[in-house]
Length: 445
Image 1 (cartoon, rainbow, N blue to C red):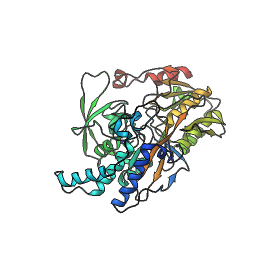
Image 2 (tube, rainbow, N blue to C red):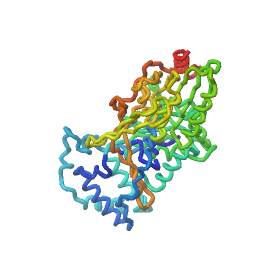
Image 3 (cartoon, helix red, strand yellow):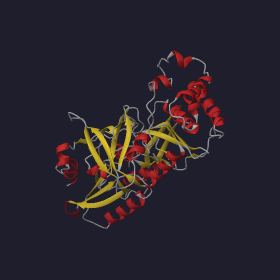
Image 4 (tube, rainbow, N blue to C red):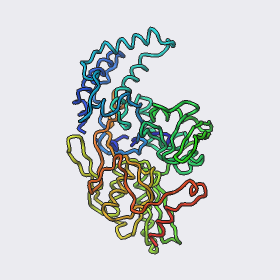
């Protein structure tokens, strides 16, 4: 969706929750927090407060959010800047902080930089973005007021752009998933395509939010992406015309003469569970339905609560996913449902574009033995973000915990392995073949 939520990226507790502000206990972050307070005086606005912690509901945006707003590549590896166990800090990070260095840098910019009309507020917000980016975590990000508003708009499912979730992984901007019938999908973009350039501008060191700002635009205008895909001998330039993007998160259709119900969930949004409830009610009125295909391919995630409720329709009560924070504290997210689909043989379709909430549902159904997973390994977005509103309209989103399946398997960076591995190749894609769906139908007949 030309965005990152997530992982949204979310209005609630994001798909990604250590004790709030516990990251400030780290020595490096202590002086960064002090810097934040000093800088707030510099622009005459107190932005160092906690603001409103959004935690009533939990949201998981896929790698969008996932890397739902992305982060600038840190100058140092995450293990060095974060001071993780076993990592040797560079000598300059062991020194006491000299805040004069900040003012000296600001003065040099004012006195020497060619352009003289750069507002101090722009430099200030840039320093805050850099502070969070120094954590080396692509899912932790500082959002300026305009970026925060865009992030909230993403959660509503309506915008203008090309219709693709993007993220930064292994320091490279990639496509997480193109949305069905979007300009991105019609142009041939696929999950895990590398975006090398946007309108001729290199994406090296670019955050996903910066990329979103370049890719989005008014409907009818064009954007040029230089894309590389594994197996290609060279990158290719792809021109895409932007369009209004309205996402209906769930659709239902019947296959195999009505014997199989295919529920395709594109994202876990506000409308997902009402549509899912309608789909189940419709299925229950058709006595000839023998099996269900839950299609989570190219689904970047969404609301945690929706994921938990959906999984419960196959199992009733049970732990869907566990959340573990940095001190080892575990919170179990349980389903409490009337399992209306418990007697239906089920196949879940997943691929490299299935992320976050999609991985929670597929991981739970796999661990419970309620479904067979078919397709390819999922994306591996299993971290929890806490979203804090700040007084000026900006937001800070920080990774605070990790997701684990009911059997204790880590989702983050690991992904969910399918029970039956079936690839969808370039040739399949170009010739409108879907061997993954075909295998699911075969298993349910």
